[in-house]
Length: 182
Ligand SMILES: [Zn+2]
Ligand SMILES: [Zn+2]
Image (cartoon, rainbow, N blue to C red):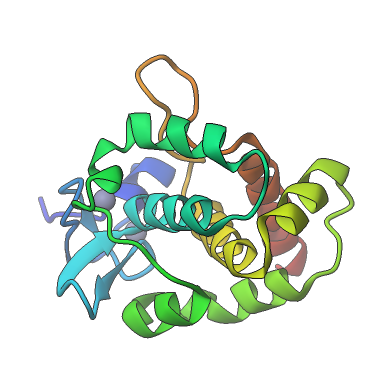
């Protein structure tokens, strides 16, 4: 049996896909929809791990008053991020786009989402606004990558999500938007 992309198989067990590499961090085989080569760390990284790196980067840069509590929850689960280990930080959307061209098919959706003035959800709008422009862009990139995955993403061993709660709402809005365009 040929190897398939782990994330494609999670979405549809019968789906055939061509993995281009193995994620540096979580070791899954992933296709070009669910992973990209990182031009700076010179490693292949899957969408889940990239979404985690983008979220951690957004939390590091965020100017929101609720940032510290969110960042500490994130670092408890992704201890490797806090240590500057396997998850590498992004300073902003432009760095993400130049480092990970494998996700270029999503760049337009990320830009459009980033420019959208409102998500018709007071909490999402407030969180994105409070985070500041740079962190907002990184949150949007994370939410788009999460929207392309079959399930939202990793929870910590206590079942509590390491990702800020509003990000799941944002992911849902982007999933609706993608489905509306089909
Ligand atoms: Zn895939
Ligand atoms: Zn991974």
